[in-house]
Length: 472
Ligand SMILES: NC(=O)c1ccc[n+]([C@@H]2O[C@H](COP(=O)([O-])OP(=O)(O)OC[C@H]3O[C@@H](n4cnc5c(N)ncnc54)[C@H](OP(=O)(O)O)[C@@H]3O)[C@@H](O)[C@H]2O)c1
Image (cartoon, rainbow, N blue to C red; front, side, top):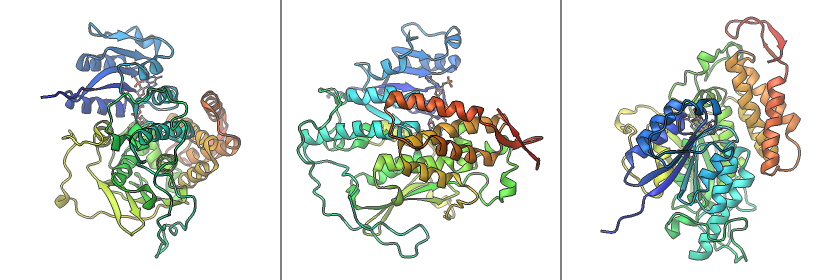
């Protein structure tokens, strides 16, 4: 019997919410994956425990003080260099990089991994929201190279023209006609500019490697759902993407009630168990706004073809509507281990540690349009996404600071969207930044948002009606 070589994995952000679930998945798939590298920020105890379970060759811990308490098993090296993440992502013995960090810290390693021709599976939103203009050309270049070597392209680009479907509440939306574009990529001298000439580390099957999604794989449950719906489809027949949102814990609340939301209330998500930042983002709907931008960068269908629908049960993770009126959806238990595993095993499926979904026990699945007046983050994100990379990068950087300030009590709940909108307005104009420019820009936006005076409740976040100007 011929043994298939195991895929060698670097996991960046292994101690966080996504990272720990990725470890869970990897432990269940030991015959298929070998964990070569693990990286975390400061949680030395969890990192040491993961190193004992997975026996990686190398680990990294960003916080120098925490490193002193890191007790590693024999045979595991510590990389304490400043560029440890990039070194891990570009190791010769790494085929697949899983990105489970927050912020822009992994952008440089992601770009370096793709340039080398490694596969990247990312949960990280900044990779696409801030860096979509940098990462997607590399993923498309890898796909184009595979197409040039093996035949036609898998995921064709967005059609240049053609009617788009009506708005969400349009009772009879039009269908995007099938454009008459040539599906065969034009011959080009170098189908993969900027990539290592002998890139393409993992032995991806030719029919799989022709899609950019084989190289840059989304882990976010909604984008995984869309990806799963698109497999086997001609991307040019997509009429609309339906991104589902749980609506968070405050669906139906009045503006007055929203002004009195406390961190504890925002952290109690009704269906998903996630990290604190993304849980608050779900409550403001900023998470969905960022996902609209992510979907636009990943699938290139145009922002006007990405609709959001509130689906409180979080069973349908998103859907794709096609030109013929068919809608394909992906369903599953709300458990991130399913999309994490799909990004690892694509195009195969394996048994998962997630609970099964019993359709006969589900009851009703409901849908309603989002209320963008009471949850303005969605509209702010759409405008930032349309404005380009700078505005999108300003939005996601500002949101992270705004959420931190809300959790620390220096900003009220509606202030999260207000501060994010102000940052987009202040920083959003200008050309798309390159990588170094983007990292400096991100720091500038964060510094401004951290210092910006803003209206916060005068007594406590909960139960106060008076407001005052306060700096953080
Ligand atoms: N949680 C979810 O269910 C979910 C769903 C979809 C998408 N996402 C996205 O996935 C990303 C991660 O989310 P999360 O909820 O897992 O975040 P999280 O719980 O805050 O985890 C972040 C991870 O990054 C590590 N980290 C921080 N700074 C680092 C550095 N300089 N070098 C290496 N590692 C570093 C942290 O290490 P320490 O803990 O040791 O500091 C931790 O392991 C975010 O972009 C989020 O929006 C999350």
